Image 1 (cartoon, one colour):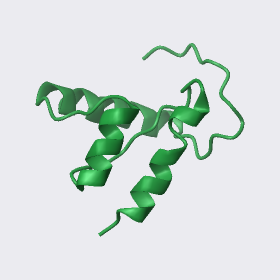
Image 2 (cartoon, helix red, strand yellow):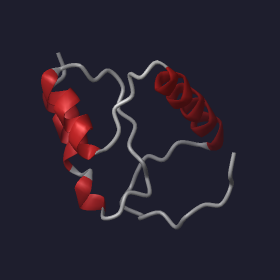
Image 3 (spheres, one colour):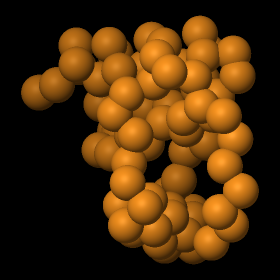
Length: 80
């Protein structure tokens, strides 16, 4: 695990702690092996709107932040 951290926008909360970050990286690696991982804001938004997204993980270093601002709201509005 690379511990070189980029300065993160203070508007981004909550941020996963180190242990959770390691577990999320392992989960992402496993999902990627099965080719079920969606990458990027556009694919994520489509999955949310289609109702196929089960877990959404947002990167804290997205630049500009406005690219992913709509995703949490989309998740909340599409909860079954």
